Image (cartoon, rainbow, N blue to C red; front, side, top):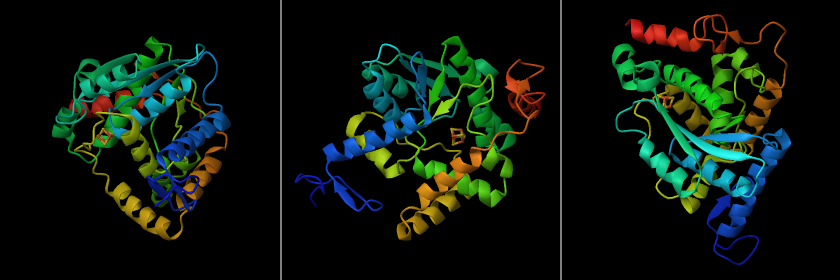
Length: 296
Ligand code: SF4
């Protein structure tokens, strides 16, 4: 099949636009969308230090490559990468992430659950089972990332979340009836480093193609604890529905953004944890999780 914009061979067909695109026009289209997302949200400003949360997988490796290309010549914005090793055997070799960052000339730092919390995710799962593994993992990783960010004057975290991830999250929150998450403001609470998601309007398969075209050595293995049954179901339902109605994932992401534009009622902002000093409710969720996983 030929590219809809030139005569070269197409590397992808976009059902939602009806276009076949060659590698050159795919890259232009992809990067234009990511740049537009950054511009419209005013995600990157002069003086920023942007840290990519680099797992070594396709999404985070692709966002590191894209931001290196976008910001490489700028002297007023710093780019770095952070890899958190949760301690999951057979998954996330931090050396892979280090090699990817080094190949792009991006400064890289790493930290481990074992050093920070004196417990690995494997040990948490051995004590508590897999039911809440992602919940524990997410809370502890976020707190650790925030601490590293303060040490390195990071002003933004960049994540490789794509359109599929975002649309699934909106639908999952709706199916759970989780109004709090659906309406939680996009603006981060004081003390938390704001997150940016340049690929949030780009389908997962296009992010994967971009990674294959530009990054060598990224990790294809999935986390052994990624057994969220609801997300799996929602992914299947959405993919099936989107095949017949190609704009559905965009509609869900737009709905999520519209709902999250609402301001948090006064007095519901975060405070400082009485125990560890991190931003939180009263005792922060990180301290609650550590109590839960160490107690058993
Ligand atoms: Fe952590 Fe869950 Fe992601 Fe695995 S899938 S790294 S347990 S959040």
